[in-house]
Image 1 (cartoon, rainbow, N blue to C red):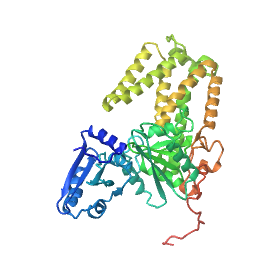
Image 2 (image 1 turned 135 degrees about the vertical axis):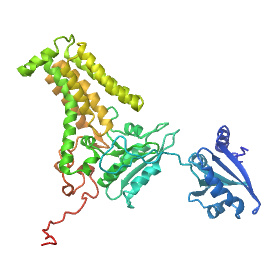
Image 3 (image 1 turned 120 degrees about the vertical axis):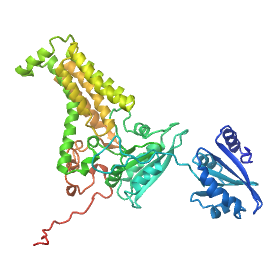
Image 4 (image 1 turned 90 degrees about the horizontal axis):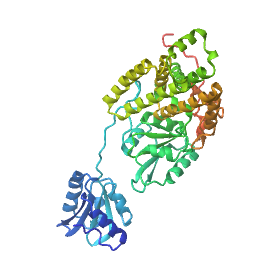
Length: 493
C-alpha cells in the first residue's frame, strides 16, 4: 500500500518511510479501464477535502480518456493543477493540502491537485479594537481570508502581495503587502530582508515577528503596530506603509510606526475632527497621569511635603496616621495588588475573571485601608491610574505603560522630583534613539516635522491632510490635488 515512488532517490525513500508511520497518509491505486492504465493518488486525509477528491478528481480520472500525466489538466475541473518533475516539491505540496497523482510506470513526473480542506472560524467582531462607529469585521487565522478582506477594500492592481515561508518546522506563510508607486521601496526591502533572515523552527503568531524584526529587541516599546481591523490596514497601505500578515494569526503588523500612533484609535477617523482630537488628547493625558501620579505622591510625601497645601496636608496626615510603612512600600503594595488582579482577570475564564477583578478590587482595597496598610487617598490615586491606563487603544503599549510606573517609583523614592526628572530624561533619550524599520520612532517631535503634526496629538480635518506623512518618504507624497475653492450659489438662489 505504501509503494510510494519507486525511485531509489534517498529523499523519496526517506519521505516514504516517514509518511508510512502516519495514520492519515493515504496511498491508493486505481485502474482506468478505458485507457488501460493504473494511477496512484497520495495525500494526507487530514489536510485534503476528500469530498473534492471523490467528486472532482476520481470520476474524471476513471471515466475520461486519461492516458498520461499531462491529461490531468484537461480533464480535471480544478483550478490548482501543476505538473512537475521536481522531487523537492512533493513534501511541500503534500503538507499544503495537495493530492499527488502519479501514473504507474512513469514516476518521473508528478501532478499536484489542489484540494485543501479549509477549517477556520468566520469573520467576527473586533474584540481588542472594538469601535461603536465603523466596520465590524476583524481578521481571522486564515491568511487567504485576511488578504480577501483587504483586497475588497483596496481593489487596485498596484496592491502587491509577496509571500514568504518562515520556520523550519512550522513552514509558516507570511505575506508582505504594499502599494506599488506609493510605498518607499526601502521600507519594503527592509521588511523583506529581515523576514528572510529569520532563523526559527516555529512561527505560530505575528507576535514572534514583532520581536524578531524589531530594530531594538531590548526595548519595552513595541516598534510595529498590530491591528485586527482590515479597514485600518487598508488606510495605512494608502498612506504608504507596509503591512505584514502571518498565517494562523488574527493580527496584522504595520510599519514603520511612531509612538503617537499607539494612542490613536482608528475610530477617531470616523468622528468629527474636533471630537476625535479631544478624545485623543484625553488619552494622552490619561497615559501621563497613569505613569506619574503614584511617583509624584511618593516624591511629595518623602521629600517635598512643603508643596502640599495646608488644607490638604491635614487630610493626608489623617489618612496616614495609622500606617506603619513609608509611602514607597505603601505604593508598591497597591501597585502590585492591581497587577495581580489584572493578571488573574486576564488568565481566568471570562465570567470568573470579571468577578475576580470587580469583587477582588473592592474587597482588597477596603480591607487594606481598614487594616491600616494603605491610605484611602493613595487607593484613589492607584484606582484612577489603573483606569487611565485602560484608555490606550493598543494592548501592547498598555503593557509598556504598566511597566514604566515602577522605575519612576524607584527614582521618586531615591531623589524625589529630581529623580522623576532624571527617569524622564532616560526615557526620552531611549525614545529618541529608538527607530521603527530605520525610521525615527518619536517623529514628529524628534526630528520636528510640522507637517506631520496634523495627525499626531490632534487630528485635523481631512481636507487639511493633503500630503502623506513625511516620515514615510513616499513616492507619491500627495493624497489628492488641492482644488481652488469657489463660491457657488444654491439652486434656490
